[in-house]
Length: 109
Image (cartoon, rainbow, N blue to C red; front, top):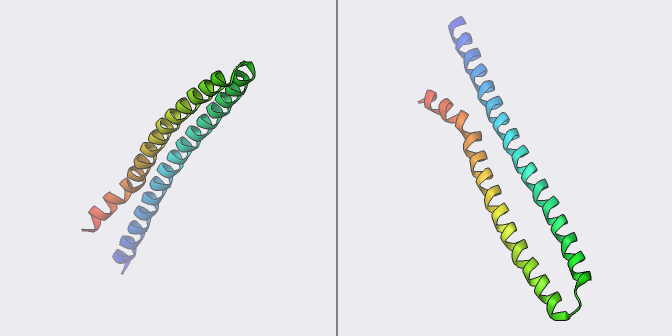
């Protein structure tokens, strides 16, 4: 019976270690995603402010449309690039969060 209890304790300890590793990876990934979102928000605000300043300086409607079209193109490209990067971080986060459980499942087989 003591042997079974020791085995039970070891399994419990292993499960806690795996969960802690997984939560650590989740925390790290969440921080990376948060940092990327903050960077994107800051850049978008700065770009929007620059757009307003440019629009106040234009003298014709054609130039205003040109400035706004240029801004829209740049903003879209920036959004797509940042969304791709955040998507990659999410994929890495899923892999890193699951990785500790792979070894646990392999031991169980």
